[in-house]
Image (cartoon, rainbow, N blue to C red; front, side, top):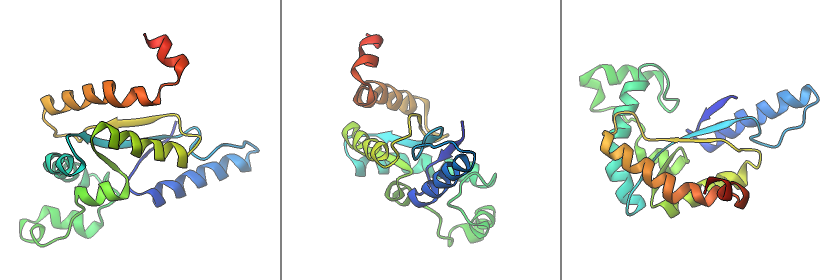
Length: 169
């Protein structure tokens, strides 16, 4: 199953439409998002603003770690080169967590905020049935465990249908 890391809605949707069109050329009709998985980074806190403040250092470390490997699509070649040079890095505009939250690629806020964001994804891409949510690499273990525990207990239940929820109990 192909995986799309959400960096921007427009870019991911373009890939989804292309994927859907490729199947259509083979005579297979798919709903938008079907047979795909979307990936998000997230952090849960008492508010969206607080989540952004708390996750920003981890988001930046993740970007530095994976930018050089060209795994951060939001970075240009010039930005990647500037990150290598301490003289240029301080004056180079790099993507910020606020940009990622605004673009929809980073989920931040209360469990209710994250549920709302994921429900909007579910509505926009009716074929999506797999979403991967993870904390940025570099996030301290205790923060990761708390986020994952809260996500499991406070977010996931909003997406379980009655049949699945009953089977889980």
